[in-house]
Image (cartoon, rainbow, N blue to C red; front, side, top):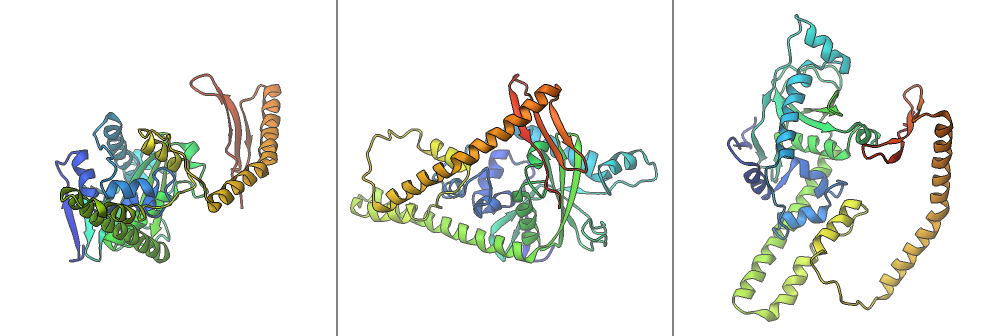
Length: 353
């Protein structure tokens, strides 16, 4: 590693200590959230966590322990033997002449003096000399590796086969370490391996650098005003509180079009009485009219959607089938019972170019 890149070992740390340390900056897995491109963690929640206005309550649990075990299995049992496709794992495993790929577990944070707000925490790294999946050439530097367990139905909901957040995470790791190549090892449904390789993408990395810096600069400025507020309260300068509170709240990220944002608002305000009545302004009225217009526009679309779904259900019911499979990798339609005995309709059809 270059002189401007530092490594902080986390060997012996608890999960709680690990997360507390990361509050000082933006970790690789948080970059998508900081950019407002993570469907599961809104930017507002991350902002409130970094400014210590929201307690993320980090605790070790069976789920986090299981996650660590699965990551170890992905690397040990799948990545070491994966060369071309999922079938190659078994073929290489039983081939006595095959030499498993080497890797080392990364237990710590990488820092780069150029980007003091970013932290990189890849799951593992491989020594130089690994063939790149992108073009088949030999990687002359170390290869970073990120391991993920994912449900196949979730993976299929993305055109690229995995969440955009994973791509942002791996590219941010290249930003911090200044390496050129990273691999993403997925295990679908605990049984199906898939390996992706990525070279350094300058345009995306520039977006990551600028976006996360803006996010963290804003968070650090907010922290300054929170400290000013605390001092004002201690010294009884209550006349300053309204202006200080304005500076704090104006730095909060705005609304996002995700269910996770709506869920977080519910969680954030669930203890409030919510009994006041606001007097609406013209801007809010126009926005409400726009919402009503959208609702009316969606009615015929929702009706058509339901008609098509019911058509498929009727066809499968008459054929006593629980799915319709399309050849040439075009996916499937299914209507089957879940573990609770409730029928669920799924459209897993893929767009083939």
